[in-house]
Length: 441
Image (cartoon, rainbow, N blue to C red; front, side, top):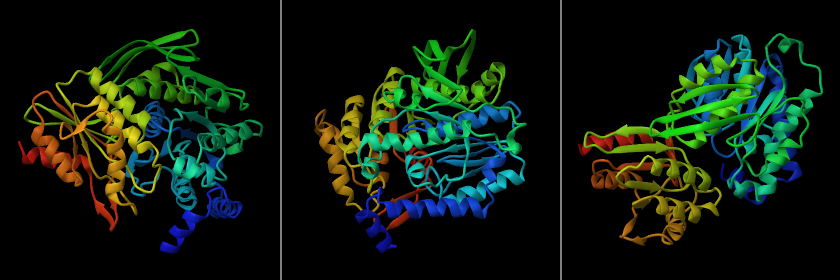
């Protein structure tokens, strides 16, 4: 294992031999399981932030409209409404695990499968042999540059999904999916800075979305603590939506999901019903209440953009004080760490820098990088604290929280484990927070 990790570090991800090896695995997996994806309508969801929520939202809207649907996401797998946890900690599994899952879907007569697709998986051909009919992008912001090196290469990896759909559009549909209601389509975010790069890829049907422009638009938006109320406009139609999950970014996710549902021939009335009954994803803006009158929120936010969006939403809800707990993952994009620290310090009254998942890195090096950015806003021990033990950091936040305060713990979401220098430990952040709140209540 050490040798494999060493080779990964010294051999570029773009090395032709490495890419060929990945493609061989993707081909072998598809052949072994008999290309099961050709018997379903495959929907790919990619982007930096919002992929998991959008994937779940699409699954829920399609299923609640009566369709037989399956899903593979960072947090969960689902087949016709039966959910199981994704314990791999990967957005997109290995090609063999993915194709095996798709084979199960075929055996259970699934018509639609929603697949959350990472840039790594696209670049490494993990999804080879899957003819995507519908693709959707949430956004592209700074992430995974430890692997892709530049934003241009990161963007190009995301475009692979849309080029796949473009190729599918120019071929005859497999007979197995001809009877399944859908049209091949790309769902594009007009507010993303790379919109034009994706829009130039050819496809007969494109559904664009955004707040101010696009085929799908949200307006007259009223944000509140536990959700949003807005009017959704499509072509000549307009419907009111009462979303149960808060934040402008979740309104965007709802628009993206609606675009997919429309491509799958779901009526606006059924889309409305699906969006309004969607309860969210565990570990994404999940609120835990304390008997002492404060709340703790657990979220998966991992990037500067995700943190900026999250904290802006939370600040708009006007809590008494915000106490933010921030760490960062090891062996990943190092450039983002100071910016993450700066953003959390800027938006919180008390900022606590702590350990997260160091993997093979020195945890203190990671925390010092976050502190570097946080110190631009706050001074140590004057609203800024370094607590290297994550459990102790949450304890400190809970002990110092007052009525009306909001504790925000980001980075782990609903992941079941943490990866430390010495290996994995069991760690469900939501249960940890509940345990600590109970201890001091």
